[in-house]
Image 1: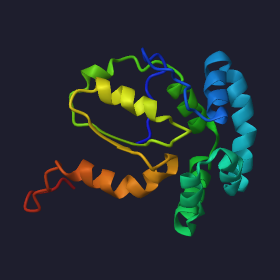
Image 2 (image 1 turned 180 degrees about the vertical axis):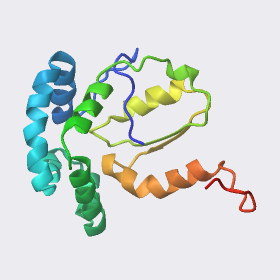
Image 3 (image 1 turned 90 degrees about the vertical axis):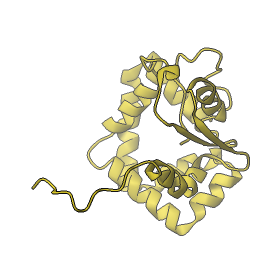
Length: 181
């Protein structure tokens, strides 16, 4: 869901269509990881105290579609809980994510052999849709759903369908089978 392609993806302008805030963070992660940490640690401290701060910071880059979604009281409440929980102990999970997104994957997506579902909103400015299109062209047999009217946070509304897709091929447990204690 709203994924990024490997940083070394051939034939992809990795930053095309990406919000300036993400371009800055991913560029800093590549050029100066220590500077990235120095910026994100105090930012995370502020967000931990007031998780709404992150949405406020992002507001000027949100599309109309994303503004509508994050204004929904239930979804906004869930996002704020997730931000607080994600940063509860430190900013290092966030820092690790930015560093991982900024580096090559170490494998070719064409080697993926399991079922893959790619979901992306075409209006996404945080993870541009070109990344999912790139992945869809390379992962054999990937199921791709690009939604023309959706942006980044629309993934929250698609999540139930994606989870049902994941469960589709999972065999039901044998309730008569002895379970280990």
